[in-house]
Amino acid sequence: MTTSSSAEELTYTCPDCGNVVKPYVISVLGETRYIKRKCDCVLERVAKEAAERMEIERRERINRLFNLAELGPRFSECTFESWIPRRGAERCFELAKEYADNFDEHARRGDGLLLMGEPGNGKTHLAAAIVNHLVLRGKTCVFRSVPALLKRLQETYREGSRVTESEVLAVLQDADLLVLDDMGAEKVTEWAESTLYFIVDERYRWKKPLVVTTNCKLEVLEERIGTRTIDRLLEMCVLIENRASSYRRERAKARLGVRRA
Image (cartoon, rainbow, N blue to C red; front, top):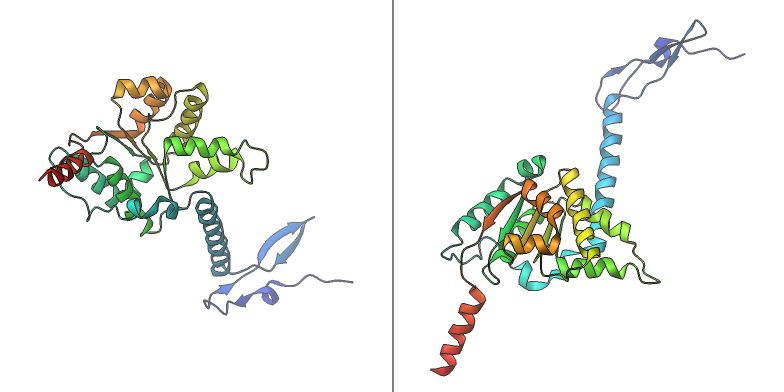
């Protein structure tokens, strides 16, 4: 014959925090029963450890599919400190820096940035600077040009691919920040348009921040990616026009001048 334990027998002092832990009290068929309870500090520690394991797994999954080391030294060296001030890019720099410095607040609201301007004027540098700033602070970021990203998704369709399309899309939705560089440079197809809309819409729905760069004017970008995607971007992103001229062309002209001299 078994007997139920009393409340006194199941009451104990937690060896970790020193709190007195009393049992749960339940009623079974009119009879009072007592069940030993774990201390709140133990439950909190277990929950914290489980959350840490999930975060580690999330980071490993993102880094496995989109390791920022693949960007190479050019983009890894793009920081706000290495930025060369240029006329017409002042506001773009200020807003990008503010976005990085106050990322947690922007992320909470699901805010993003849409950086527009002619090729070579520093948009990608600023987007990469945001990423490098956040990575040092423990954030998970995915940075890819849109043509390269679409190619990566197409590769998942090949027989023998070790990664599925759903896995890649899940990572794009899960990262703390997604940067889509050079949007509008991709080949215009129905598949590309629908895929981009899905990626942007998922970030929008879950209030996950997004940074986009493009060389296209707004009307041209709409033609390339579709009205639905543009509407999402304009709702979730601050539109910033980088009015600076092409730094790459200026450097090329300077080198040409030196050679001629």
